[in-house]
Image 1 (tube, rainbow, N blue to C red):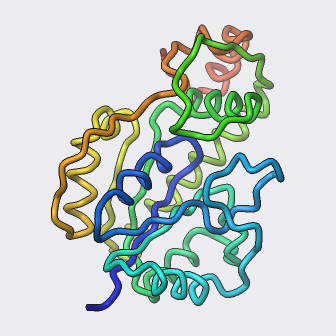
Image 2 (tube, one colour):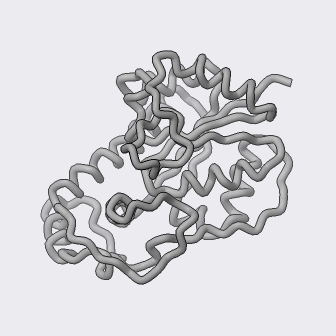
Length: 237
């Protein structure tokens, strides 16, 4: 049986690590983490390779063959796409198709909450799914930086969707706020898409920041005023 391959495309803090954990509990699936990430040196990022690969698909082929599973995949976070050697999303997706990959795109509707979650993660030096929520911790954010980062993440999502549309490529679309509310939903969709037998799991997502934005952002009013003037990314928590 030939190896079936997939890649999880997403921005940070969208549930991709949680999805990888669910997939790895299936006996037929092996899903790596952020293979092409260059970690900041303190080991925060899970499953990261510390080398930039000049021939990413040859490297991935070797990892897939070593996995011993019939379905093999990995996470490709937007921040680390340049490390694969591709200049843009479209060329990366085209070459991935040629190498037999199918795609899972995870998006988060509330990009501001995503940004705050990302900044809290960096500040508090914790990773993803293994830390339960404690008391709400607020931070003051740079509104200009926050807006610029949200624009980059939004552009990545749209570039992926545009590439899939122009190339007429089917893909699985997952939305953090909708599909990750319970493990049954995301599991059912993903196992079906990857054409593997469903298995029973009870592994709900533990949200590390299940709080309203007003509780998380010290300068919340400043942030909202800035986004209102820009007429983008304005959402109520």
